Length: 91
Image (tube, rainbow, N blue to C red; front, top):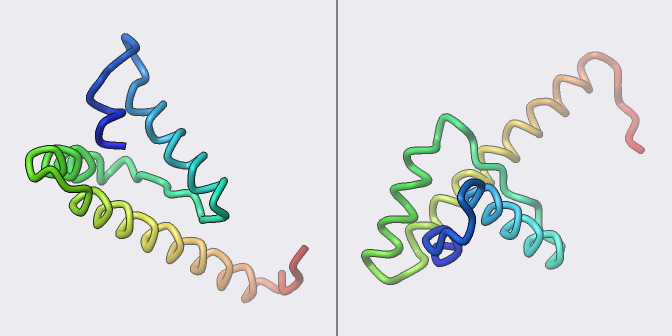
């Protein structure tokens, strides 16, 4: 991913395309797609820069892991709220 965001093959949409590709790869591996939250954009960019500077994916992987945890926590909260409202069935 860090390489994809730096080559800039298009005038606009390079980051969106890279994130779409990341989610496609996660989907193909039966993983939950990662949502990058708008309020964490600066941290996202910093993790990409650090990964490039350090020549390791670890800063980016740590960031993606934190975003995945955040996303799953929000989904669990929504599910629990729906259970309290009486929507206890699943499809």
